[in-house]
Amino acid sequence: MSVIIGIITFIIVLLVLVIVHELGHFITAKSRGVKVLEFGVGFPPRIWGIKRGETLYSVNALPLGGFVKLAGEEDPKVERSLASKDYGTRILVLAAGSVMNLLLPLLLLSVAFMIPHDVAKAPVTVYAILPDSQAEKAGIKAGDLLVSINGIPVDNTSVIQRNTMLNLNKKIKLVVQHADSSVETIALTPMWKPPEGQGSTGLGIGYQAQLPYSYTKTSTPFPQAISLGIRECSETLVLFKNEIIRWIIGATKPQVTGPVGMAEMTGVVAKAGISPVIEFAAFISINLGIVNLLPLPALDGGRIVFVLLEMLRGGRRVSPKIEAVIHTIGFFLLIGLMLLVTFGDISSIITTGSAIP
Image: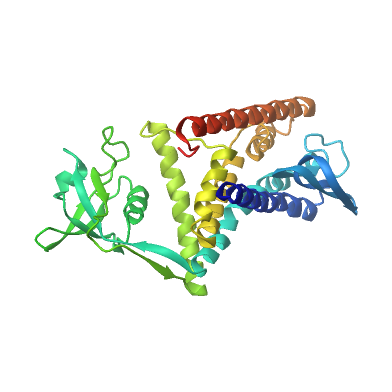
């Protein structure tokens, strides 16, 4: 039953995020005089459609996406085509979907803070200090309790993990309580690329069974929720940036999860309530916004590259046929990659019982 709930919740979340993305393209195209041929929810084959004005609004059989079909996306000879518009309009229309996905989390996260939700509260203790690590050099000892990090109370381990990753290569201040009950403020600098198996600080943290552990129901009033939503969204973007840098320098490897794994994660999150699902949707929305801006064929970022290339060439376009072929090839390569990742998810479920890395 939980699997079915996870799948249904994932499909609903994905459809909402994709519709918001496509609305970005749709609204900007309409406002800039570009002819919109079709606004589709899901992927063909089509199961229902209705035409209003010049645009067909359709519902399609595969509920894992959506699309907006614009007149002449690559061909400027088509009447009121996207390709016939000025550079600014074309870039605006192409980028609008990702912009919507990056703005939506501001609303989602604010709503998530306002909805009553459980927050884990338990003293976080240091159970190990790795040799020659930043933590050992700073003087933290096994058995210490972590009180706060950069002035933020340490209510659970995720507070330490998140704020450490937000401040890589920056000095952080940890307030610790030693075994003798003395309290000390200790400064250390998390590393971008620590020795293998050491972690950015060398701290091994967790909960002790004998210490109190509880869940506190909390909600945030509207004005503060907006402020927290903005902060959470900006911090998530910083975490994305830091993770990409860590990939580039070889500190960690990308972990790719396909639709099956995402559905499983959604099911796990759904058990925790509505607020965590909304937070998870905000995270996926940011993913979609960033990925779609990557300069890859068939993605919005890839189409923007052709506009920028045209600008650099003084208005000389790549042949519409060649551009269309490149985007088509890119589309099938992306589909192939999705199928490969999905196969990996299924294989992981068979071998380990879970598709989540």
